[in-house]
Each structure stands twice: as structure tokens, then as C-alpha cells.
Length: 73
Image 1: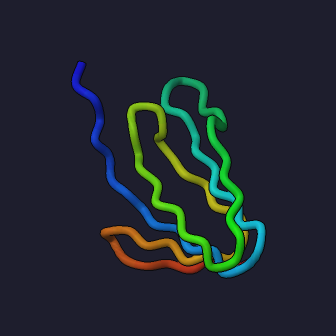
Image 2: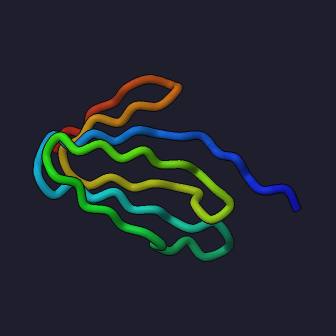
Image 3: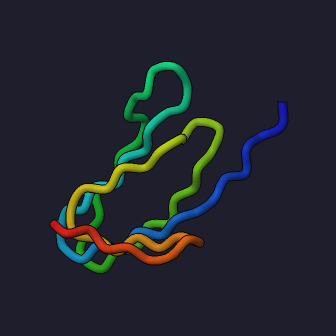
């Protein structure tokens, strides 16, 4: 089986305590990794064999190859 070389996203926290949560692949979606960002910190995330979704809580800017989005919180 060949490893998945997934896409990247960039998350920039606009406030303290922004949470970035990685969710697993498979029949049961579960949290597998959580990061908490301070204001103005940047996290680069990758979709992989284990990560099928990324959830973001808090005020942040999210940059992808599809464009840039901001959360409303």
C-alpha cells in the first residue's frame, strides 16, 4: 500500500486558544490529535493516511490551495 501524500492547510490564530483537531479515517471518525494555538501562531497541517478531516475552533484564518477563509467566532 502506497502512503497518502495529502494536501496541506495553514491555520493562523487570530485569538488566544484556537484549537486545531485532527480526525481519523475509517468507519469510526475519532479525534486523534489536538493543538492549541496562541494569537498569531501558525500551524501547517497535512491530510494523511490517518487524518481525513481537520476541525478548527476559535477565531482563525485558514489558507488552502482553494483559497483563504476566516472563522466567524
